[in-house]
Image (cartoon, rainbow, N blue to C red; front, side):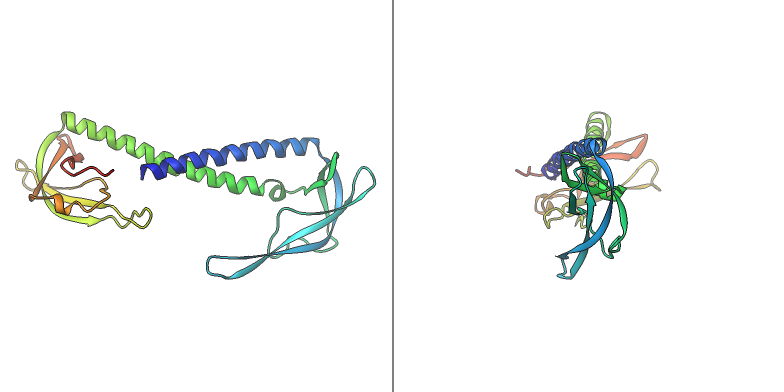
Length: 234
């Protein structure tokens, strides 16, 4: 899991760097471009299939304009939609590179920034997912160190060993040891504990009915279930 999250973190950084570089290029294009009025003259159809095999079509507008050299240029937009966002004959504002008139774009927010927006959102989501995981691991390891150092050691009764089906990595789900402990001083209080995720079935290695748990006496909800007796996964 750690390796997967490390890969996601590196991937998110790479995506965000590419988005930043592309955004700088886009800003440079906007600042150096020339504005002109264009006309929608046609559409190019682009077909694709989803995961279920359903076919869909997008319509990419083709626009025409006269550049600063009095040359008629015809360019396909890099953003398509279904239904088409325009009709033939519609007049539009376009921006083009005066040194390369074929590098032209329809001057709308989505035409200019749709790609950067999509990949930016993907990069941010992947970054937040990976950072949240590492932050959770940091907090968990910090609690573990505190409990092992100053927590109260108790023996909790093992209730069950179950798979955590809410989490799956490459088709595999981890196991969790569930246990409980009744405080002998306040016998009306029963505390439930669960181990961290274990990426193999620990049942064959459990040879007793109890498991060691370290708790914060001031707040038993802060605890660590000791699974150090289990073999390490390589």
